Length: 91
View 1 (cartoon, rainbow, N blue to C red):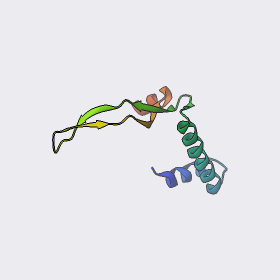
View 2: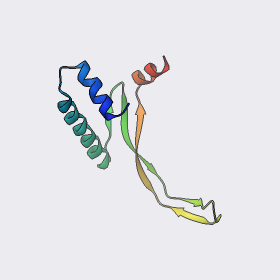
View 3: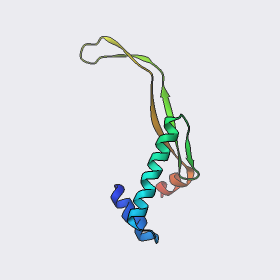
C-alpha cells in the first residue's frame, strides 16, 4: 500500500475528504521528522515508536581492495512496533 492508497482507504472509512487526509498525513510526516531531527521520539501507544538509532564509528573492510576503512558514526531513524501491531500481524 502506498500513500495514495492509504489516503483513499482512510477517506472511505471516515467522513473526511481526501485532500484533508493528505494534509494530515503530510503534517504527520513533518512533525515526526522534526521531532526525530531534534533527537526526540514519537510514541503511538500500541502501534509503535519512532526513534533515532545511533551507530558508533567503526573500522570496516573494503570488499574490493580488502583495505581497512574508517566508517564514521551515523544516525538513522528506527521504528519499533507496538504490541497491538505485533499481535495483529501474528494472526
